[in-house]
Structure formats: structure tokens, C-alpha cells
Image 1 (cartoon, chains in turn red, yellow):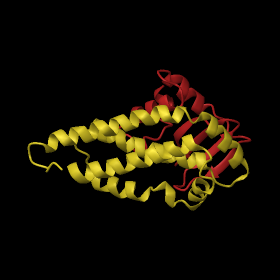
Image 2 (spheres, helix red, strand yellow; image 1 turned 90 degrees about the vertical axis):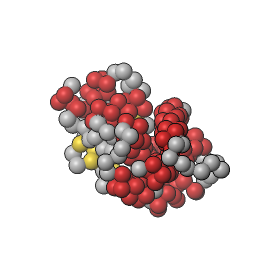
Image 3 (cartoon, helix red, strand yellow; image 1 turned 30 degrees about the vertical axis):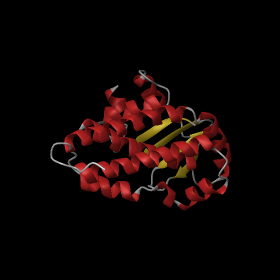
Length: 80
Length: 133
């Protein structure tokens, strides 16, 4: 779990864990944080549509799923 | 209107913080109600070189992260930087976002309500820091 967490961006949250929990809860992974981390980690960018966001972050979208990364770290992931 | 005095500042500060926590909690529920609209926007933006959903997600992350900091700590170490950042991340200043938001006002009412509440939270945090930090 620690290795998976290291791929995440703390962003503006007080802690890395706080960021992950907030995103997981919003994207319907309440109390299943390991599953959320694994799902984000397993996102395959091949064939995904990439857009660059206004703050420079990159977003990949494939079907209903997306992932957002900034400076190589995951900022958010989930379903549209 | 009640004047701020040494005796009531802490109480007001806690009330303001409680309100921020409530809005944060509401936003979590509000977001879940927008699924159908998010699916529609996702299809619409497939042919665009920008992402409205991506901007909303980043806006959410930035604002909710700061709200979480404020709830977790009584004293924010870098509150001047936070105010500066919160002032610059006005989602309505992104031209393609504003074009989308104001083009069909009746479209996507739930996601637009969510964005307005999120922007309200941004302003609440700015107000809290300005008054109590």
C-alpha cells in the first residue's frame, strides 16, 4: 500500500492519506482505499484521450474512467 | 451586527470552521448526484482539446484540500500563500470553461450547482483566513 501511495500527489491536503481518502470517498471507494489505489495504478494510458488542464496537469480519459497526473504524480482518478 | 471582541472571536472562528466542514460534507454528496450529467459532458468533450470535467476535478482537489487543511489545523503556517493561490484559481477565469458554463444556462443544472457551491467554499476559506489567521 505504501508503494501505491507514493505515486500520489498530496496536492493542497494536509497529508497524503487525507488526499487519497477524500478522492476515494468522492469516487465511491469509501473504506476501500487499497482497491482505489490499485485501480488508479492499473489505469492503462494506451488508447486514452489526453488533455492538458489549465494548471498544467495532464488528464487521460478512456471510456468512463479517467486519471489526472501532475509532475508524474496522481492527483485524482475515478469514473466520469 | 455583532462586533468582534476578544471574547467572541474564538467562538466565531469555530462557527466559521464548522460551516466550512458542513459545506465540504455537502459537496461530497452533491458530487455523487452529478454522475449522469458528468457522463453527458464526457461524451460532449470527446472531440475537444480541453476537458471541462478535468478542470472541475482539479478545482475540487485544490479547494477541498485547503478546506481539509483548515479543518485539521488551527493555525495555517502558509496562510498568505493559500490566500494568494485561492484568489488565482478562479475557475470562471478559464475562457473555455466560462464559455461552456454560460452557453446553455439550463443545461447540466446539478453540476453547475456543484461548481457554484465549490466556488462558495473557496470564498469561505478566503474569508476565514482573512478574519482569523
